[in-house]
Amino acid sequence: MIEVSVARLGLDSATNSYVLVLQERGGRRVLPIWIGQPEAESIVMQMNQVERERPLTHDLCKTIVTGLGATLARVDITKVEKNTYYAELQLVRGDTRVQIDARPSDSVAIALRLNAPIFVNEALLTTPGDEDDEGNGGGDVVPPPSAESSDVERLKAYLEKLRPEDFGKFRP
Image 1: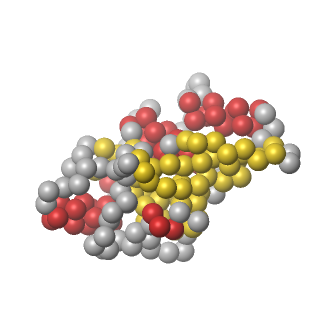
Image 2: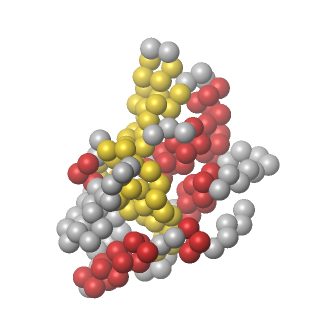
């Protein structure tokens, strides 16, 4: 498992879906994960420290974990099967460790709130510019392959150039 951090979050104009890009710490390899709008908004809100009057779902998860006296030791993004990525929350309370199955997007949103490290199975990481993207690019769901390889190359180039200011101002 390789530790990663949130490198970018943006909108893939080809699929009109949000893309969360996790990048290995101290390296170039990435894991792009296509996620839903609510999860993208939750991640952006936490990254920009936007506070809501009432807790949202991921805030509630944080409150439940801490209220039970547990800590989130780490998040592991473990595998991809049938075009779906899998993640696990590793909770610890005293001498007890509990592993909880979760979607990667929810796991990242919760990890950001609890300052927990995020790890990815090394086999899921890809170096930008690699030709072989099999098994990468999904997250909650792997996007359908394009009929045109040039579409894949354009998307890679687009994702590599994204900057936080490219996403506009977040409006809760």
